[in-house]
Amino acid sequence: MRETIVAGNWKMNTTIADAMAIVGGVLRRNDEFGRVKVIFLPPSIWLVPIKERYRSATLGAQNIYSHLRGPYTGELSVEMLHAIAKYVLVGHSERRTVFGEDHALINAKLKTVLQANLRPILAVGEEAKLNIGKKEKRDILALVKKSELGRSLVSATRGLSHSQWSKMVLAYEPVWAIGSGQAASGNYANSIIGALRAMVVQLANDKVATNIPILYGGSVSRYTAPDFAQFENIDGVLVGNASLRVAEFSNIIEIFALARARRKNENSA
Ligand code: PGA
Image (cartoon, rainbow, N blue to C red):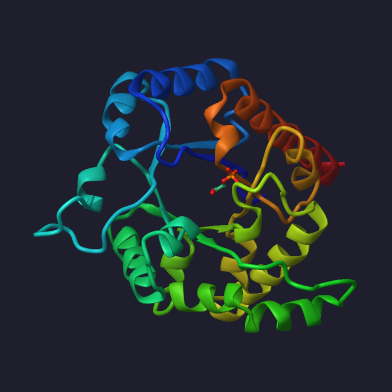
């Protein structure tokens, strides 16, 4: 069974007090962690104090630079994350649009993260909803492949070895759904994620594609989470805004933990 992951991307939000309250609160409220991997992605300045206080928290960085050290004012190196964070978000649409990150930089960042033995969470997504209507799987795959979404997956992962692929987490984040309050439907996300998984078969191989966790992100809330959790192909969620609220984020974790437990029972029955 693939990993189930619920990650919280706090973006440029929280004070140090908020940061401690969120991580402490979520860790206290959840005994479901055995089944769901919970990852906090706080602003980088809070990574160390969080880790000092909550050793058991799994942390990720929202961004790193592709070089290891040098004259890069304001940037963070993967070497600085050693023993603090295990994951790094790469390719988020805000990095692409607000900070102008292009395919080449995203590919370089991804490789830097992998070489440092950290796990990248690679985000890809389309600007405008794809017209998948009632198309067959094959036709959805063709549509995704020639879209910006498919092209960004290909260029971000150019030159990765199969063993590097096997450390990756993918996050399908339609740009139109991020921060809009309009999440994609579970059905839509499931179809696109199916196509992305089929692309991974071609870009890597069957084994990688079977094992790679693919998350959905974009306006996930306690209300929209159940619609994603019901699909076996959707391995969790990358949550923005709702990850800043302890009760709601905990609720989303619980929704995925229960869905996972149910599926496990069904599979073993
Ligand atoms: P949102 O953000 O949940 O606030 O839409 C998701 C993301 O940007 O990862």
